[in-house]
Amino acid sequence: MNEFGTRVQELIPRLRRYARALTGERSAADDLVQDTLERAWNKLHLWRDGSDLRAWLFTIMHNVHVNQVRSRAASATVSLDDEAADAPVRPTQADMLEVRDIDSALGRLSVHQREVLLLVGLERMSYDETARTLGIPIGTVMSRLSRGRERLRAALAGEPGPANLKVVK
Image (cartoon, rainbow, N blue to C red; front, top):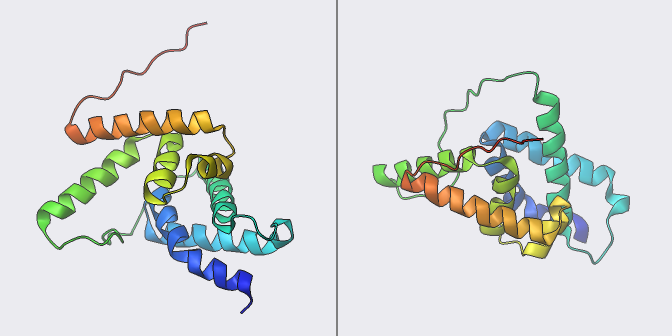
């Protein structure tokens, strides 16, 4: 296997983890990773040797995920995946409840806040890498991260979320 293939193979667990956090379902996450790797292979000529492969693959995954969400907007699916999360946890009931609460709180965040929170917090990307991956300014990354963390803290503390504001023209 060439060097590129080896580096991609090393990143697959991180891609799977991020995809699982984005989709919430194991099978959908596996499909997202497969679609991401397929698109990366087809667009290999666009990758610049020496650039950050992880950021490039996460950018592709983000774009594939956005396209999939847009195309599925009209059709609803029912998850048959009853399996526990992939996250390694001690086998205690309290820990499983905490994981469930965090997963639920993450699910209540906006997609934009959740993406930034997962890339910075889970994947340990820098603000600059996150901004390039999502194609947004670094200030937007910091703003979404701050608001996402605050909403996550409030949700986990059982506090009511912020009121939805109306746009007045």
